[in-house]
Image (tube, rainbow, N blue to C red; front, side, top):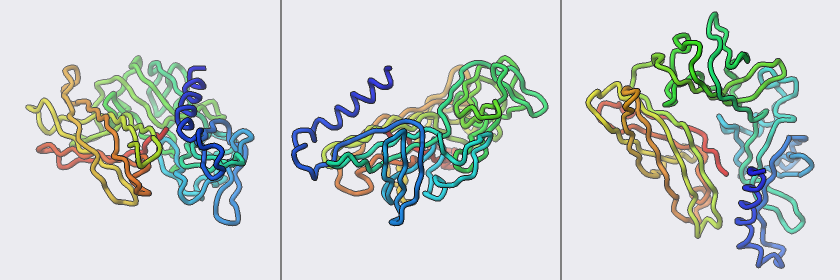
Length: 316
C-alpha cells in the first residue's frame, strides 16, 4: 500500500502543473504503469508496443529500455530466448515499470522502461557454500549469466567483488534478483558481510546505489541524484579519505556531475564508503535535460590509478 500511495503522490505531483492546461489537447500528461508484461509487438514503423497488464505503451527510438543491470536494445527486449531458469520466453509475464506521457486519448509513450523477470529480495544468511553449491536460508542461489541482466557476483558490503569460496557459512547476506521456475534464486546482486579476501588487490571503486528522479519540465527543474558506493584503500594505507569524481555518460560522452569523498571504514580499514547527492542543471538540451542513464565513478586519489566503474541508473 505504501508503494501504491507513493506512486499516486508522484503522479499527482507531476501532473498538477499540466492539469490547468488539460483543456489543450496538445499538452501531454505524465503517466506511470507498473505490472506484468502481457504483450510485446514490433510495429512496422520500428516502434514497440508493450502491453503492461492491459495498458498499451508505445516505445520509440527515444525510450530508454533497461534491466537493473543493463541498457537493452529493442532486439534484446523482444528476444524470445528464455532467461535462466524461466519457462516463459524472454521477458513475457515479467515485470515492467514504464514512465512517460499520455496524449489526450490516453495513449502512453514511454520515456523510460525498467523490465525484469521479477523483483525478488532475500535478507538472511549463507547456509551452504561448498562444492560450487551456494544456498541462502536453505534456498539454492545461482548467478544470472544472461547478458540482458548479468550478475555482479558475490560482493562485500562495499560492493567489491570477493572470493566466494572463502565465505563461511553463517555470514549475513542479502540477495537481489528473481526466483526462477526451477526453484532457484537467480542473483544479480549478492552482498555478504564478510572478511573474505577480494578477487583483486588493485584499486577499485564500486556502486551500491545509483538512483535518479526525473523532474519536469526539464527547462525549469533539474533531476535529483542519489549515488552511493564503496572503494578500496589497499593502495594507500595512510589515507583516511579518497576523492571520487562522477560523470554521466551519454552516447560515450562524459559530462561531469560532481565529486564525493570516500571515508575509510573503522571496522574494515581496507575499504570505505562514499555518497553523492545532487541535482542536474535545468536545460532544454534533448540529452542533458533527461535524467542520466549511465553513471561513471573515477577514483582520482593518489595511487588509485584512476580506477573507474560504470552503472545503470535507476530512474524514477
